[in-house]
Length: 404
Image (cartoon, rainbow, N blue to C red; front, side, top):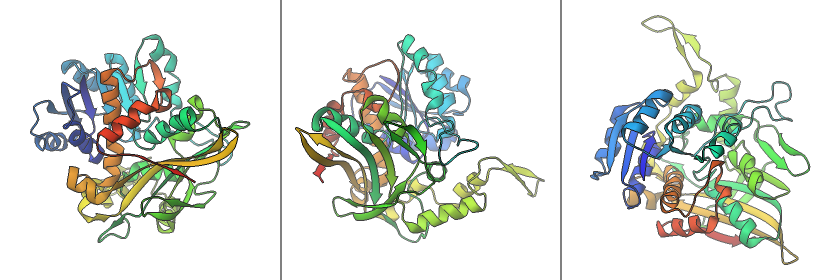
């Protein structure tokens, strides 16, 4: 396998550190708009399978050329969701398998944003599913931790733990703190704003997909391994759009443990219009310049990849499932916990980005060995879950199961 990784930020760099310990690939080309970032990621590894390049993720032709030049058969997208479609199309034009961790962007319903879906996450990609399938090409979408591992958990629950499923609810929480910062998101703020301020999507079998208001339906969920109770709220996320395509359940939700301060900060950004992506004109020494308010917010905050030494605590990603097994009610929580102290000591990557990064590497290895295969635009639920969960454990990062 020859891989082109586009994006050498926190998650992309963590991907290289994880992959460097595995033998399943022949070459790993690391490309970024900033050549210093891709060069630094490669230089830190001392592994001649890795090569650094510069590429504009929005330039489909340039990405396709890079795939051809290095004879890469897989494109792994580690950029933010704005670049999903050009990279998706570049992989298709070059005949490469495509893998991402977040799907094409949504757009709220123009008249009823908190009742009806407009353009849903992944709609642009699934619109081309028949073309990919007919060509025998694979796009594995949403293969991070959430979406990704959470979807694998959903399929595992359906295959091995339940006869009927009433509800699948992804629940994410942490007790992470960052020294010296009152507000320092542990993940890309551009993506965080997008998913938290968009109308959350809920799925119900007799209604289909519909939306609610941001931060709706608060509940306290007790997370394992010492994290404890965290208030979680509805947030827009790919799992709700992916799981029902392959797993039968009466209801699917995603709730994120954000905390009141985080929610109020996001509400303030929205109130001030600082969550917008459309550029506004601002004065500068060189004259008026167009600037995206959301990019300004991102530039004012610390890079999440640099926070590892200041972070303490654990992060938990997991899937809560309620249903029936052998005629009796059952509830389980399938989860994956990463301790920041461990991920920093073992990989030099903070817990949230490391937890995101390990899952696409596991998926690449399964594709390389043939344990996973397919054609079309497929989510993680479309593949057998046991090989993934076994290999994740072999990577030294076991998952857990708790009866509720």
